Amino acid sequence: MSQTQSDMLVLVLGICGVLLVASFVGHMLERRLSPDGSNAAIENLNARINAWWIMAILIAVAFLAGRIGVLILFAFCSFAALREFVTLTNTRRADHWALATAFFVVLPAQYVLLWFENYGIFSVFIPVYAFLLMPIISAVRGDTQHFLVRIAEVQWALMICVFCASHVPALLTLHIPGYEGRNVLLIAFLVIVVQLSDVLQYVWGKMLGRTRIAPNLSPSKTVEGFVGGVASASLIGAGLWWITPFTPLQAGAMAFVITLMGFFGGLVMSAIKRDRGVKDWGHLIEGHGGLIDRLDSVVFSAPVFFHLTRYWWSLT
Image 1: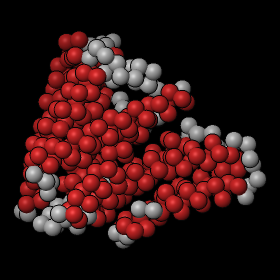
Image 2: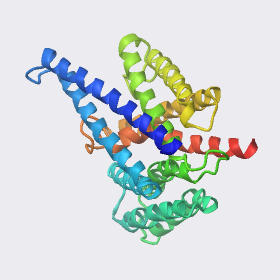
Image 3: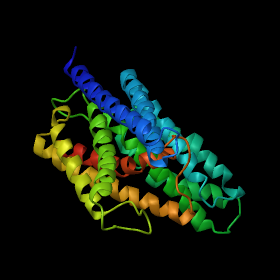
């Protein structure tokens, strides 16, 4: 067994252990506090735990399938997220061809460029070429009503759901001396740290939260939860240095940066939901809302983590 496989096995066993404990605790709480299903908080907790089992299994299968499995998984996530985002935009009939291009040309092309590891085009394809193409396609249809708003929303959807999300599998394209064949562990590091930060911010907020950060955007986010969650996730990130090419101090610093970006990503996406008057982006994942509700932290942190890692090793 290779070192990468050994490290991945340890990670998988650790995640399964945490989920087993969570499932046991959730089952006991349900038996004691909600035997008839009347406690909404307990029922929501168990729904979230069940959803985490499904997501963990899907990610594990993608990792086992290798590079192609990871690309397919995140291409599907981008498609589903883009669909959720577009349902909340002010698109009109004149935008249908632009939307079709976004779904069936731009999105697949982004992941094909990733497959060929063409960083030069991959990094500018959406923010330059797709951004210029979208308004052209809509403009030739002749509908000028709310044109700027409509185009900006489609462009923003592409940026978040495709460009930013594709930076997660883009970690597989990095060439780090002495770390060959282990890049999939960078994805594991990113996802684990950012998602644990979300959970820990919620836990710390429930235990100690008093001061709300942005009550109009997300009433559950508090200063105490933010500080406790980011600090805890950063320490966990430092403890996971062994699956990264970083030292413990560097891994902790990386974890700190990506948890900050994840937090602010959650705030931005909450602002969009409040603007549209919805609680969740969708209902794809029971107990978690839509796919964007799970990806909001990751998509903001992924490009930053990718470029920090890429340029760190090119400068050292």
